[in-house]
Length: 203
Image (cartoon, rainbow, N blue to C red; front, side):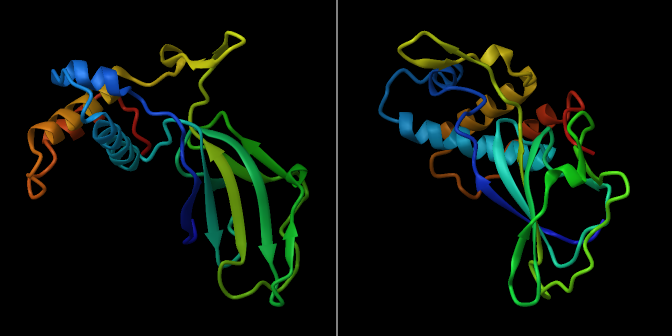
């Protein structure tokens, strides 16, 4: 696979655990630190996603290449939900957005794959030297929602996230709560041990 850069365009709006769940786990019985706990949950989720090379909840990423990539291409951060657009820039910075019907998008495979449709190849154009091809895509588990006509509520039990992932986030948040001034301390090794338990990480 050729080199590329990867940029987060739209972060997830959901987290694997709630502030209240962390408070129960860590025996925190006040609301003073709720915003702080929320930030710990986000940090723990990002650490876990980076370690497992996955996207837990729906989020949008963009890959940038300096040339047309060789296809089939494995799409990082599974599970792949969709390819949102593929565009390229010629030497005069003219942008062309390609038809997604020219590609086969495999969301069943993990990680997802992108390939040319039958008899289709990359166009014969001269690309600008850098950041010349961009592939934007959506990844992550898409949770179902329940609409009671007044509000839409998240149902976490229908998102297939393993319990050991949630335990790892609880552990991280408890560690942060008990080490308020311990920035030099390492994250507990058990945090990563929990993330290694079920083969959920992407090879």
